[in-house]
Length: 153
Image (cartoon, rainbow, N blue to C red; front, side, top):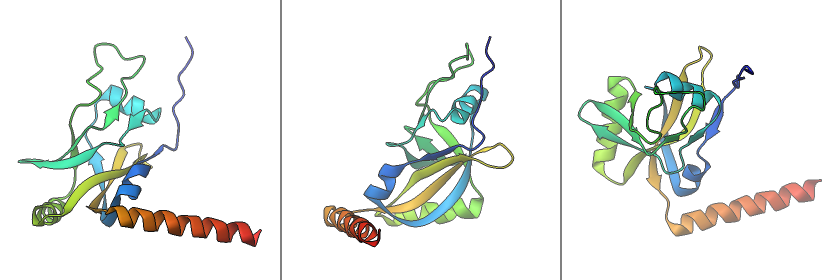
């Protein structure tokens, strides 16, 4: 039986989020995972393109974040798309909840990583949705920057 290797530096990005949203504020939250889920995270088998956060009575939860079942897991595997609780300070939760309730704002995951202690952390952002013309302007600015970089070489 071959020993499985896990990555030391896990950085999972949600690139679609920066295209669809303006980030107002960012927070780092802990996430409640089971044993087989953390093993899948260390293998970078996470998809959070469609994920979003919502408030339940007892805290902030993330929905539609897909963590693939661990290949060597048995009956310990949990459903891949289950809701997972996020761990934040109470003052951060109050701030986020008040901004979301004002309207026009949402909480989305932007990045997942493993910290120095080996714990899975999720970077979440308080965000406002972009309009179509905002997306076009971002694409235009990116293309101009790319052309200028090419001219420098």
